Length: 195
Image: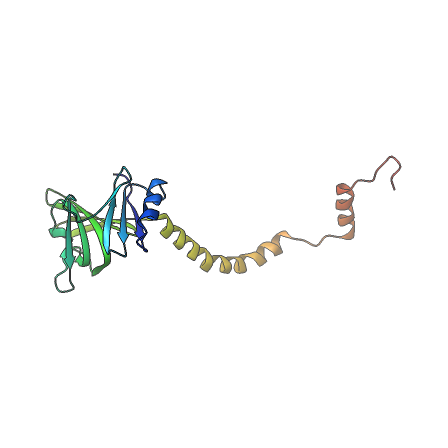
């Protein structure tokens, strides 16, 4: 399966949105959340698009509450759009989709494979009885953000800790004669009438 892409329309400018599709700034396959219409859009391979939930779309829309969350392990094969609270068996986390998310479910011999797509990446849950394994993929932007944060937090401390020792062990004071020799090697005297 090709990696899924996610995007957002904030201002309802559909001409700009179509231009982004046409120049592959928003690539296929892609889900786009329309903040103005508060609907999820599916981008087709031919660079057209449809609101998800229209009659011709094969998606089921589910909305969970804190009292009655959507239970992922109880879903059958299919593609779902989930809003609100949802749970995943054998995990202690109460999930809440503030914006609609896409969930692809495949069931085989009682084992539920559910892939949850969000704007930060996707998480694959393999629910087999009392065991749930989790495998995450993240967007490049998320990875870059984590790396930048770690570098900003750790590099200054490492430099302050290690740099003095490196300087002390590798840099020595040069004598006047050594400096003169380096200058003579860099700028040799002109032997044909120079100084």
